[in-house]
Length: 299
Figure 1: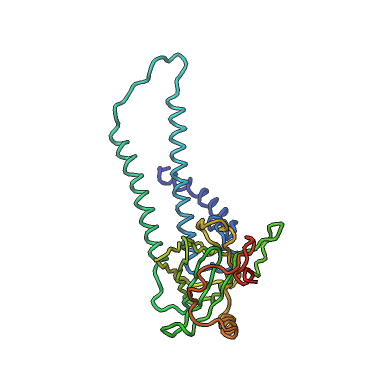
Figure 2 (figure 1 turned 60 degrees about the vertical axis):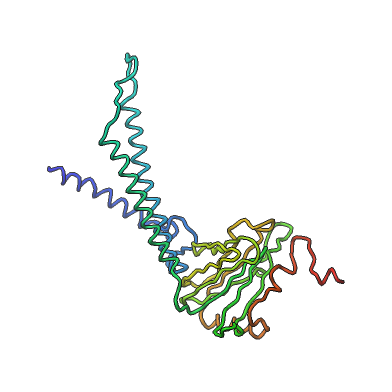
């Protein structure tokens, strides 16, 4: 039988076995055990599959390289081991030009390939919507979050907002999530979040969305994406920002458009309108830190 046909017959059971194994994988396993994937449900955002694809492909390539490298190491250990009766050093070679070229070219190709696909995906993820359906300003401060849902007016007088406080854990460490700042997003709408910091460097991270952006003083960042699955998700600061960094948590709710509109209307009814101004640069109360508000100190 010709060698090519032998290779085909050898590859057939390997391919069938791989297909069977992959068919039995859950959504989480197929996406490299990253968070945010649920069987039979869409990804959390329009970008999540792209991030997961880059992650899984990178690991597959690295695993193949690792297997080949470990195999060559094992072969060298066995093939060139010292045999019984041998003495002295084996024959020494000054160089082997073909092997040296091979060991230079292959890593170069791997590095360039990984750079290309990473740069391509990053450029796509970092693209800002020109005309988003929703524009929100997320403001980070030690150690909580404010969320402002920007309006249509130039002075943002029709914007609405919520102000958050840091998490206040109970004695056993449990945190009441209902008291955390909450970011509400409409499903299947183009969202742009403008990221601002009021004090130190923070990082805006929605865990299941598989992306995070740093927030600096004097340099506002943006993140554009489309939430594609209704649900509740966890968010946190991913940059060590001080003593209570671990308490800088927030909730994310992706809801239908009608529920989103009703939420904005409820904020408007509460009088939370217009730009959040500089009076709120720092928290006025610090639950869990023992600090008191200015009002309490005056009393």
